[in-house]
Length: 193
Image 1 (cartoon, rainbow, N blue to C red):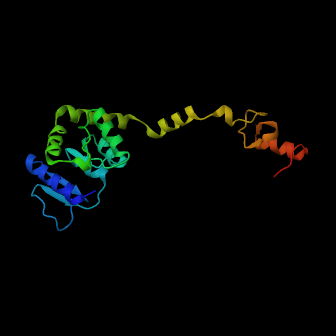
Image 2: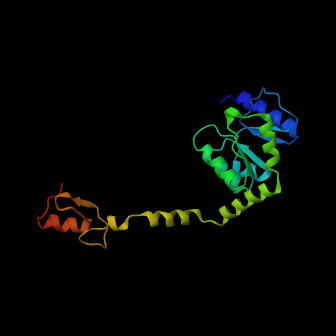
Image 3: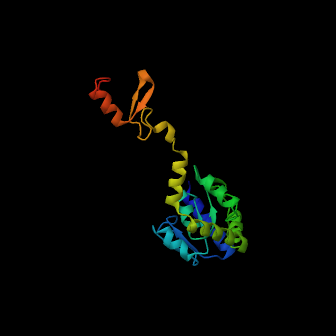
């Protein structure tokens, strides 16, 4: 995308609204910035987002998650891929405005979005999402869902269901455990290959 064009739009929207901003990686060292704009290099989003009133970004999964973990209303300016998915999720949950695709971005739309994310109902929606994230045990939930979808019945040995099948006997249409395979090899019923 054209970062110079995007920077110009962001600065124009900030000038229209008077909001202050922290710009990370968008502005170059020689860019002339407004007095209400602070430029930084790479920084932890988890740390930074604790200290801002709202966030505006490209909509990558990690940046979106960091903003929501901080309970911040969010403006997403998507360019491609899952960025559109995340912007739709933000809008659907009331934590930000509709997506503002980078290729069509205007300073008027961005200025409206800046004002939108500072509304109490939008902030409250972002805080509700944060609270839900903080209550959730992500590892435990992932494991629970993994087990729900794990095809246990198709993973067991057909001849000894207490063990996991490790081998297939295609000529007999069976899957067998390591223990059963050892017995069959030792007894000469099958050959180890």
